[in-house]
Each structure stands twice: as structure tokens, then as C-alpha cells.
Length: 334
Image (cartoon, rainbow, N blue to C red; front, side, top):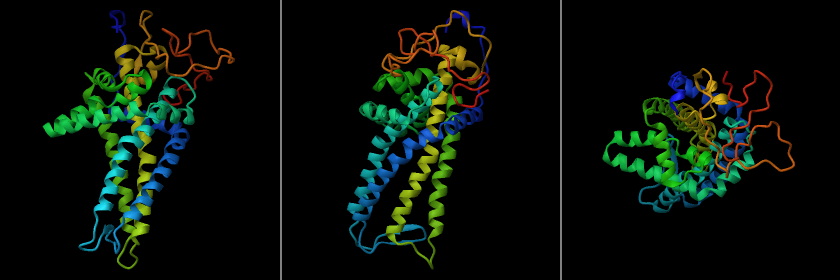
């Protein structure tokens, strides 16, 4: 930010405030994000369920909410299936979902109507890039974990907005990781606090539903192994369908907040909604949205305003056409 913008007052965002705003962003886009998450997870979990049941050792049983195999039975196939499913889910499926969710939330922040179908197509077109960033982030965290737990946590926070940098700015691979570090640097503790709070919320949901599943199994009415596997997969789907979009909303909220604070990104339209008071300086530069995203409007569509399009060289984000007093970004920020 140039020296002329030094008079701009930045109000620090509290951790709970970031999560609260992300929750409102999630709530306002719940239908759009669930149209992405639920169908994809239904298909994937159905496939995984069939694989698990086919690999389940004969004579398996459920006791005290846990699945057991008879002593001496071969469990290698089942364990291998579970491991492969975890890798595919974590490195491929969830990357597609996260990419699509970041696209939906970013469209909302940029004043465009979210399109679930287009978001999924975007994520599939960029599957290799999304998976590459996911692998790089995972490797960095593992290396940090091998060094020391603190190192893993530090890298987790520093790389937390890598996906947003890829989806919004087109940064690829290590460039996305470097962009995330540049944005988070100087705001590590605030970013960590928001990520930790949402991680606790997700953790509670992740533990709670399986606990309910375990409670359904009792000594007098034990679940069959088939019913247990199906219900466990269903519990996993519900947990991510509820908690996953919240995590993505927090990431996108943090990303745009950091860009506003460090780069005066679209300061006139986004500033007040992200904790900034005061008018934007006339000389403040507004970084352009990359030409490749968002997609250009159809040629036949009339321009709603004389302002340059968001994907034109040097253009800013077009003002949202919403009634006075209504939040154009659908986030509930006032």
C-alpha cells in the first residue's frame, strides 16, 4: 500500500468476529454449497461403502461401538481399502470440493451470483492444480511435524489461504504457497486463532456424530457389521456436509481480509465489511482480477454500469446491483 494510504484506519478483527462473519457467509450460501458437497459425497461414500462391505472379513461383529474381526481372520484387504479410500478422499475428492467452495464464496465477495455447477466444473478443470497444492501443503505440514509439532502448526497457518490464492488469483503450486505466506505474514496469530476456533467446532462435530452412532449399538441390540459400515459412512458425509463449508468460508474470509489490509483490495466496496473505517485514498491501486477468472459475461448482456469489468486489464470489481442498505456480498456484514 502506498504512503498516501497510511491514514487509513484498520480495526483489528477479533477471532470470533472472523468466524462469525464466515458463518454468515456460509449461511447465506448454504444452498449453493450443499448442492456441491452433498451430491459429490453421496456418490463417493456409496462407492466406499460397497468397497468396505466387499472387503469386510467373514464373521466380523460390532461391540461397544467398534467393529471387530475374528481372531486370525485376514484383515489386510479391508485395511488396505480403508487406507486407499482415505488417500483418495483427502487428496482428490476434498480438493475438488474445497476448490468449488472457495469459488462460490469468492464469487460472493466479488459481487457475482454464485453458480454451483460452474464452481464444480471449475474445480474439475483445475483438478491437477488443486491436488498439487493439497499435496504440497500436506508435505510441508508433515515435514514440519517431523521437525517439531510447533513447526507443523506454523506451516499449517502460513499456508492456510493457498487454495484461495489459486482459485482467485491463479497462483499455481509453490507460487500459491508463497502467496499464502506473504498474506499471512504479520497476521499469523489472528489467522491461527480463527483457524483454531473453527477446527474445534469441526472436531466437536466429528467426534459427536460417531459417538451417537456408537450409542445406537448396545449389548441387547447390536448393529450388524453391514449396518455399522453404512451408518459410519453416512455419519462421515453429514459431518463434512455441515462442517466442511464452514472451514472453507473461514479461509475465504481470512483471505479477503488480508488482501484488504495489505493491498487495499477493492477497498471502496469491501473495506467496511472487513473491519476498515474511513474513505479509501484516491491513489490506492485496486489489483485486477486475473483475466482467466471470473469468466467474461456473455457479449449480448448489457453492461449494468459504466465501470470496467472485473476481468479487464486494470479493472476493478463491478459494483453489485442490490438495493440500498442490502449487503451486496450476501455475507450479512453491516
